[in-house]
Length: 291
Image (cartoon, rainbow, N blue to C red):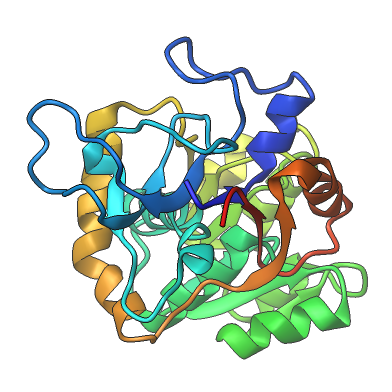
């Protein structure tokens, strides 16, 4: 591989809090880009020398990695391998949770927490392109500006304003994508509209919260969620196929693009993790595996 994307699960795995599946490499790295150097039996969609980006079961922090052919996607037109390494984990996660699981439609009010993260910057662009009204939370004026520049109608600095009040003034969110958890969970339910959906994908503040389910029942709300890595190869292949049909043409045309924060050599992976854990980044952090 030439480049590897850095994601929070990598840091969690390093800390011993996110064990890889039994059949996966014990090296971190859930997405990467590079050149095909070998093909498995029966693979016909790719050729030696093709440039691809790929969702990985693990092992992205290495010169070579194996992954199912159906989890690979072509490098979009006009995009280099550095940018392409930022695509798989975030785009698989956002598409499967916001559109496939969350069912976001044009005209709906969509709130994404952590709007300046890799997930957030991807979700803002896709939701805005497909016609949703986009709201985002972030922790600084600079990050809020980045969210607005990407298409968020409102960017809420959570240090200065209550996202619950903002969304309720707009009629409530139809869909919320949350990676914070903890006390955000009951607050998210208050911020949802009737028939609203909460999709949980991570727990930066912990997985436990006290929730009064009576309002949820009365307002016909839905709580769901998923993690990507444990899903079957077939499920991931279906997400890849949907992305290739619905999203890759937008990347080819330059209508959406990954937001790049910084790059580090593979030997400085610890520094890359430190930047991510400090939450000072806007967009994606990548590792240069080789020239």
